[in-house]
Length: 354
Image (cartoon, rainbow, N blue to C red; front, side):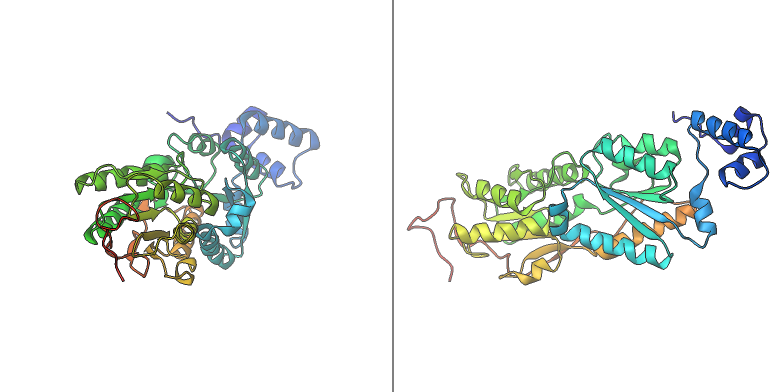
């Protein structure tokens, strides 16, 4: 059971003053003595209470900052198309509300909890967008007790008690596997993201389930940190196994582009020898040769939807968890029916495609 939320009434009772006096003290207005103001501030600190700055900010025609903390290295974030598009979508709505987006990169979940708490207690933000949820994520209980208004990006099973928006990754993974199987691929692999993230676990389980339903075994999977370098290493690992996959699904576009380079490095033709399927469908997918097939979704619109939902919360509207449109398959030149039969490489009895 969550702790009861501290209110201005509790602070007034602790300090032995009226609620109006508490309001005057925190807004630095005349009407209370310095000694009384100090007593009120001590009472508020002892109870962990801060005034509802989100309501005050909205009363000033929506002015206020939205917080976003991301656990990624700065260099990697700059190369990752998903977050660039997502942040662009957030900013498009925040700017319409005459607000600002306060972005910070953090190294751990504990650092983020401290940062979000400090932002909220000091009035630097009116609310936050929370991303990259893990199973049993500690942010929910801690930040909810503070009264921080927030929208979570992730499946509801990971993000409670905050309302969330999410993509149905399990359905999308199933569609990707069935598409490749329909082309004739039986050796399908997946290069996933960080294993501790909730959406990575959902995609991993969905891949295993889809492969099993099609009678293709468990399939090979590799975990990464989403970077191009780790995507390349994972691809090399897969392509040097005894049963080399003829198709690989990637958890983001950056790793798929890296996989395309590794295929060329190893003398494999895409898609004749190896089919590659990316995720997110940023501009990168259309700049490669061949262009990358991808599971597509509108990330800019996703970010904008998240921001609008947070502003609905700040206006006092009731918000519930809901999915955004599921990623859909966009076939391009990097996927086709497999040309070779069997699992051996470079054998004279292996048919070739021209």
